[in-house]
Length: 242
Figure 1: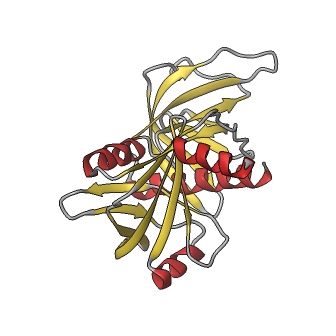
Figure 2: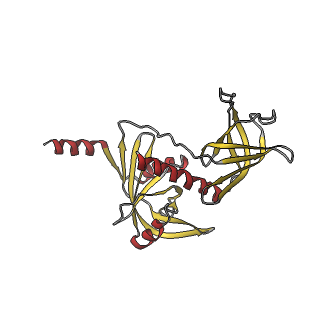
Figure 3: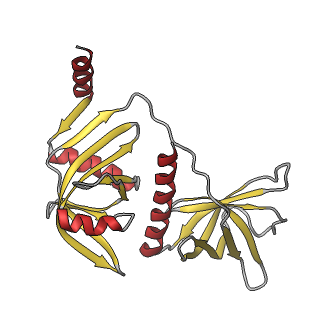
């Protein structure tokens, strides 16, 4: 009896959305938030990561980024089917998809998935974000030919990053400053280099550390996807340990 009650309670919380306009609106929110997707494939216990790159209602497909780890790519080509799950603003969202076509750009695949006919939408009772710790990764800033600085990566997203410095910083490094070059060497030889706009300069703490935060300027899509894959790998590792 208890099991039946539990099942009924779950069904009551889960909404099956079939209205294409509403499905499109929810997927658009996921796209704009660049929310990480967990992807499972038939006959595989492994969870892969991806993000939505595009929603095309005219041609009835959504475009997903290449699966990470890459072993999922060949599995998806063979099965042609996948299940997608994600969290968005305290809500579980899930749907099943059918592979229609594979696009390739700069040796990176993207998948045209048939536009979902059913979206599973479940309000969560609790929602929290797991903090992600990052290994020491150097970040180099070049203000001009004479001023070059190096700090350590504090956090990163596809939009920007923050850096910890333990040395004195020049006055030129202030909120609103446009830095000529910001370079981050992520694992697996993935080098990120972009102009960088300073949005935050913290005060020196008791250990002499200063935090600088800002956004990438004119970051290209290839580098943006490199960062997203790196963040996805970190997130997956945290989830595994948890």
